[in-house]
Image 1: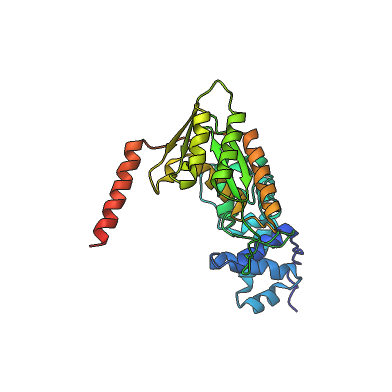
Image 2: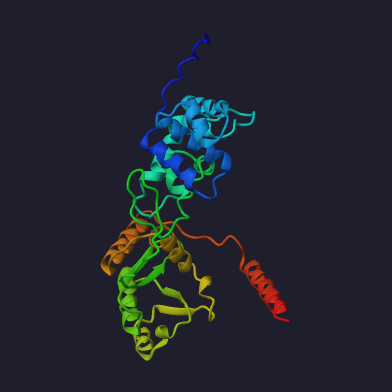
Length: 317
């Protein structure tokens, strides 16, 4: 009579661990080895024996036993290959789990998704540590947009039938030195709304200062009514970027920040909801403003643009 083998310990997963494992199984970009290991753990968590999991997945019992043991010993981190020799890691399993749960189940106060910077600030860890955790567990909070509202344990999902509830116009003036922004929302982008915005800037900028505004070359900014307003407010000086070169204006970088962090993946069922989100994000930005800095000189930028134009010209011949 053969002796019975050692009794295997039961395997259970938390809701957060299940969400990660199921995500690895579904995600097309997940490595096949990681997807298989995730299936082993999920099948085992359902109470199936090693032999049953082996039969259901068509793999050797020893493979099931190995990854069961790795998960029991090290949790989600055990699903990856053994780390290379070197300096021991400083992150604990609790740190890793905290980042994963926060990534899957929460969103930052002032954005629709986490960035490495915002997650690092929220957890007290470094951006490189957050990046390593996200890469290891195939998490990319910035890639699924637009998304439906999240619920615990439910992955973010794209909507195929998104209906736009309306639009609004945001006028914004970026103070280059400090990064602070003066903004106002209007239903249209006409000379009348632009003049109201100029009046707001005039009210908020100290009277002793000259005001130099860099604007895109838009007809609304040059109407007779605007020119008349400027004559009555001589401290205002308007400078226009060349046609199709509004990207030269640093405020466009701020608009990109707003779009990427708040609007691109936001779910707004009315213009009023959209405007509330924009105002809240603007207020939060001005609580902690930061200036944008050019990382290249004007000559370097223009040389790169010229090279690009040259390539486009050559490709047309």
